[in-house]
Length: 285
Image (cartoon, one colour):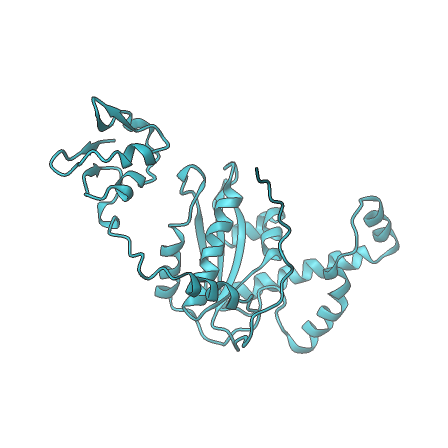
């Protein structure tokens, strides 16, 4: 990997040295120098922090490095995005254009990853028949599991396994009735698009990396007029079903840590919502 400093541009401000946590940039003879290029993890911070475009790095795509536009970064606008975004479970019968999804994923790739691993991958499903079949299979499994938990033996297993009855089990009779009466999809919500966010199963922070990217996807999608919803039932099902992983094209050695449905909302939420105050512990001097 070749990293060089352009002497005709560098003013020796040392920002590259101060910002490099990998030990690549060091002060040598009073000037900044890429002393250990093999330690570089391609985070791009040196080229991002340099105010004079004095660094050349052949491991990076120079076309992506442009002046950051901070004038459009408005705290209130971002706050409004977060406060107005809702989990959407009712969608219009309208496909999401591939170009729009690509635009969202292009932004998501700039999400932070541990040690700049950049190991997050995506599977985008817009095949409605496949989405519907996946939802029906998961719902069928959930109802069979529910039937076992309400039996005498099932209750004993739940009790001795220390598993408390949760809200989903309490709602299952209602959901099953509604599913039969209206054919409403309570798993993937009849969404026109499904996005699986995955990382290597052995990655130490793969789950964190995927969910940070997923959060950015939900916020940016909302800003573009789309709705999203995390689908935990699918994420859990993918852990246990090899058949489902194969059907949805999850690569070998990868694990899905977040699943999202996406589409155009059938209606909008006029107001913000109520949330508990955060539990915060302050440790001060």
